[in-house]
Amino acid sequence: MRRRVRVAECAVVGLLLLVGTACGSRLPESDFDDRPDPTPTQNTAEPLRVGIITSATSPVGGNTFTGPRDGAKAYFDRLNARGGIDGRRVDVRMCDDGGSGVGNNECVHKLVDEDRVVALVATSALDYAGASRVSRARVPDIGGQPIGAAYDTYPHLYGIYGSLAPRNGKPGWDGKLYGGTEIYRYFKREQGARTAAVVSYNQSASAAYARLVTRGLRAEGYKVVTEQVDFALPNFRAAAADLKEQGADVVFDAIDTYGNAQLCKAMDDVGADVLAKVTNVQNWTSTVREDYKDAPRCRNALWATGASRNYDDTATDREAVREFRDGTKNLKSHSQWQLEGWAAAMWFTDAARSCAKTGVTRACVDRFMDTGKPYTADGLLLPVRYERLPEPPKTRRTCLSVARWEDADGWVSQGDMNDECFDVPQLSYEP
Image 1 (cartoon, helix red, strand yellow):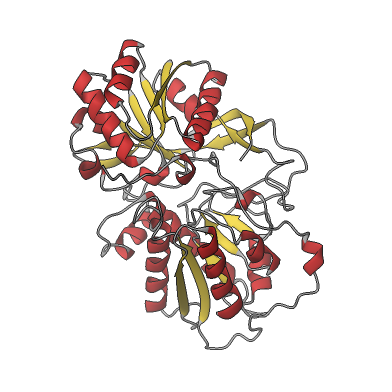
Image 2 (image 1 turned 90 degrees about the vertical axis):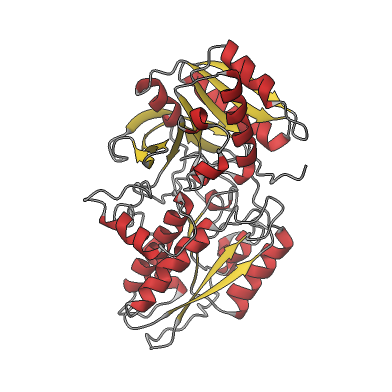
C-alpha cells in the first residue's frame, strides 16, 4: 500500500527543533563583508519582491509543507488589497524545490540571484541545502520552519521560533542543539500524567527523535513505555495493546499523520483510553475529523502543542486570529502552519516599514531582524528572540500554546499561551 510517509525529521514539535541536517558550505561571513547590497536603495513605487521556497511536491507527500506558504501568500494578498507597504505592492515569487537539495539550490539561485528578492519569507523546505548561499548573500530569511538545523547555523536566517545559538556556520553550540522539557512538564503538572508511551518507527530519524522524547520524559520523572513498529509493515494494534497493558496515560510519537491515524484506530479497537494523545504543530489542522475518521475516542483525546496562538481561537480579544481567519477564508482547510506563515509575512512587513527613510533593502530589513528584540506578530507568536549566546543555557523559562481537539468545537485552547510557562532544563542533541 502506498503511504504518505511523513517521518520525524519532517515534523516540527513545539519549541524543540527536530532531527535534521542543513547542507552546504560553511565559509565565514567575514569573507563576504565587502559585498554590496544588490537591492534597490530608493523607496519608489516599484513592487517589493519577496520569495517563498516550499517543498510543495516532495517525497513525503503533497500539501505536507504548503501551510506556511499559503498563510504568507494570503497575508500579502490582503496587504496588497489595502495598498501594500507605503504604497508599494509586494510581488511574491514562489518556488517549489521538490523536496530535494538540488531543487532547493535552484530555487535559491532563481530567487536570490535572478529575481533579486529583498527577503525570503515562510520557508518550508525538506532539505534546505541552499541555506549557506542565502546567508552569504545576506538575504534575510524570515519566519521559516526549522525542519533542519539551518536556522541555528547561519546568520541572516530567522526561523519562526527564534534561536539563541551563535549561528557562526556550525549548528548550535559546537554542533549540538538544545531543547526544553516544557511539553512533558505541562502534561505532568496540568493533566496528572505519570506514564508515557513513545511510539516510533524502526527508521533512523524516527528512532532518533523518539530517543530525544524519551530522554525528556525521564528527566521530568515519567515512567516511559517505548513502542517501535516496523516502518514498512507496522503492527499498530500490538503497540496499542501493549501501551494499554503498561498503563500509559499519555502518548507521544515520532511517526507521520497516516501512522498516527492508524495508531489511534488501533487504540480505539483495543480500548486503550488515555488522558492525551499528543501531536505536534504540523498536524494542528482542521482536517482532524477526516484524518482520524475511524478513531472517535482517540480523536477526542488529541492534544497539540506549539509556540503560536491557536488558529481556532477567535474569542473577542483575539483580533489578530480573526484577521487571519478572515484573510484565509477561501482556503479549503486551516492549520497552525498557515497561521505561522501569516505571522512570518507580517514580520517582513514590519521590517520593511521600518525602512521608510532609508529605502527597503536587504541590509535594512536584516538590521530590523537582528536587533535582538522579541517579536510577537500582534500576539500570534510567543515572543521570538534571536540572540547569540556564547554558551547554551542550562535552564530556560519557556511558554507553550496548548489546544485539545473536540468534535463539537474544533481545537479548544487550554489556558493562555503567555501564562503556560515553565523553568525547564535544556537537553542537548545532535542534528
